Image 1 (cartoon, rainbow, N blue to C red):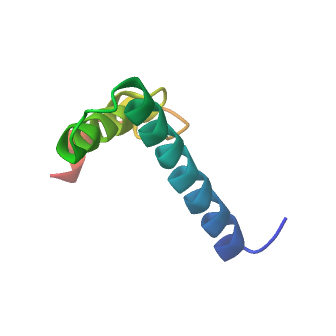
Image 2 (cartoon, one colour; image 1 turned 30 degrees about the horizontal axis):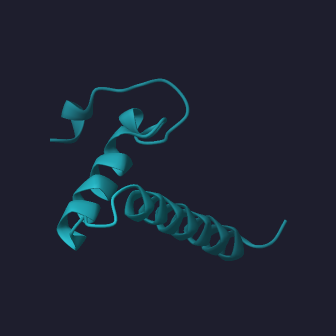
Length: 68
């Protein structure tokens, strides 16, 4: 496996690809959707997709209030 930077760049590119694929799916399902509607759906997807509910982190859950 490559360096940490290369790994991060690969992960970032996969994320961009996933978002583009999701936008394509949304536009195909509703060709008359506005850019704002598409953006709202993408934001919802980032918040509600599997793994997002805990910040995509592994391990035990901690109380986020400790960071306030």
